[in-house]
Length: 261
Image (cartoon, rainbow, N blue to C red):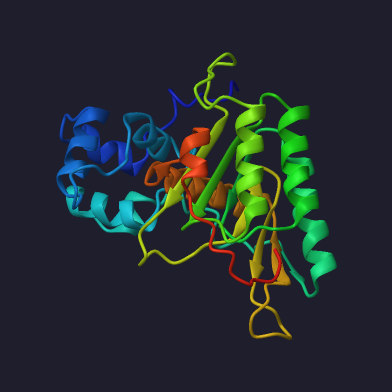
């Protein structure tokens, strides 16, 4: 029996809810923009389509808005996205900095399709150089870096400038944008740290032995990593772009004393 394609497959509950109203993807975006405090939700028609197809996971905030729009509970609208959540997650505790660093480097080195890095505290030169090397060696690799507030260290600013030397955010020669740099400036937004590829992810956590360091972490498998990739893409969509040398140089450097990473 021939395998059913996405076009032939049963529409997801999210798509059925839209079609029941005879709405286009653009109509959904308009509805979401109306409910956004500033009139711009950051959602695009392609994002809505990917949510409906189950290619990407809808964030909690956007789920709430869609539930209000369609007047359906999340367990109905997003069942196709959450079907595998009952399975045991692949998880490994990284109890010291050496393990954490090696796992982060492995995540970067193994990325071939997409790499997302979140956070403003990076100062590990080897780790930052590994990211630069990955972009040099794999031209088709799509990279996102989302800061939460300005960089804490000058070495991160230098890294951002180096990325702009390696790639032009406006370049579409391979059909898609391959460098995405943004900063979340909302002081109420909780700071996030992780590195994720399509294969695995690492989430640094506060130290198990020190009240101020980040030298431990959790390593996650491919299924969990894909959800973090979606989180990073959506965080970028809501961020302010810092994709020119001037915009990067205009970022203040906090120079706060923070332990790795």
